[in-house]
Image 1 (cartoon, rainbow, N blue to C red):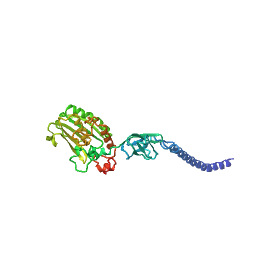
Image 2 (cartoon, one colour; image 1 turned 120 degrees about the vertical axis):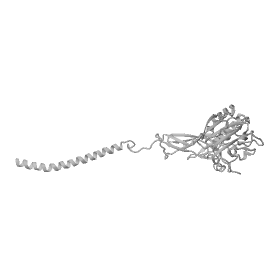
Image 3 (cartoon, one colour; image 1 turned 180 degrees about the vertical axis):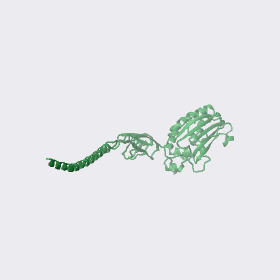
Image 4 (tube, helix red, strand yellow; image 1 turned 60 degrees about the vertical axis):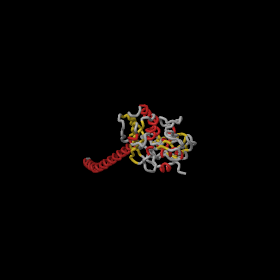
Length: 354
């Protein structure tokens, strides 16, 4: 028995030690594999990695621009951008387009809008159930745009007043403050109170007419003959305009340009005797917005047939619907102040010469 016991002990000692070593290695390998699989499982169950990747849903659609003014027979592209809930764009998603009234403005499958006849219509962009719309106004104002911005064209037969461009070298340009400018109107106490109030009231329609491109502020200054600063229009009244650089006693507008056609500031010198509506006409129509006045055929100042002329054929104390249509047509385009007449022809806003 002792011998047998001795042999068995030796046998067990030799063989069991090797087995236990292999068992230890196997346990370590199994543990490593188990931890690896658990780790992989944790990764796969992490945020955004649970099972197969699913595409993000379209939460909303953004259209740019969302307010467009075009002339009949011309086109303007509107971009539609599908967006995820977190605000990330999803440019690969399909977009479907539709016009509420194709007889006013039609739209292609790529968002190109064509003006058909005068009117206003909504153009819709839809992607995966989300939708947005742009307002499209179609106008027919080529001749009026040419005359009111450049003092030329078929409507200029009776003569025009383009006061800010009189001293500019050719070519004719769209005159105005840069898009995105906040312009301050400063009225001297030398201007009659009624005229100051009328100017202030008339400014309310400017942001709408310029489609938000120009913001305006108003203030009264005690200075009798103020000098304008950057992005400012000042107006004062005097009995002797020629003493302040005007060519006649009817007054004048003196412009300072930062670039050809692009305004830095304007100084309005006006006779004290002018009625309030003429102050508004000169400050808002000519100086702030750079528009020309069109005389009636054979008529003379102030008998305009456009630029702030009301239904009674009198100068209005605000921008009329005609003026607003001109402004919205121009500011609804991709052009900027300083653009030439040729630029307007190329953009289709003015008819080519016959």
